[in-house]
Length: 171
Image (tube, rainbow, N blue to C red; front, side, top):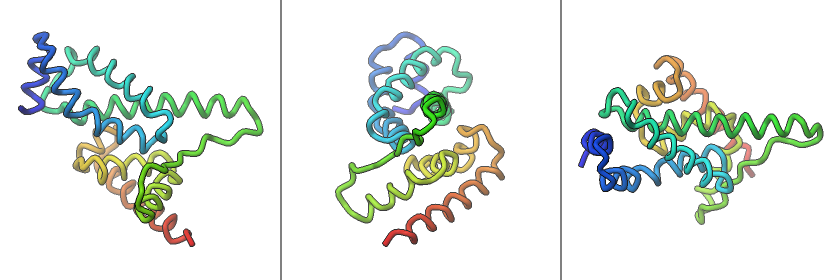
């Protein structure tokens, strides 16, 4: 069943439709949040995303645009968590921002890729995760990030270059 009909059924109070919608999208949202924050903080933020989705479904204007709407909510939840953590780090003068290690991958090349991804600034990391790992179109990425399409394209280009530089620095 497609997202649009699931959203419409959810609006009518169909709990089975909500279960199906969560089942279909939980893993992509969790993956996105994990890539942005690291595995230790992803579960809580993902839970916050689903609470916001359930509360916001009645206000979703275009049910056919569920995926960009969902990732916009996830992006805001990640940004809120990052702001809170960086604010706490600023209070602790000697502390550095928390590292975002990704040790979940068993294959060395993949682990290096994710380590390089984790070392990128959040904006560049985000566009790469949305475009390559979540397989969203550039138009959807731009909508989720709240930026013009041209900015999304240039950010993606810059992110690729930064990631390439990160990977080339590795011994």
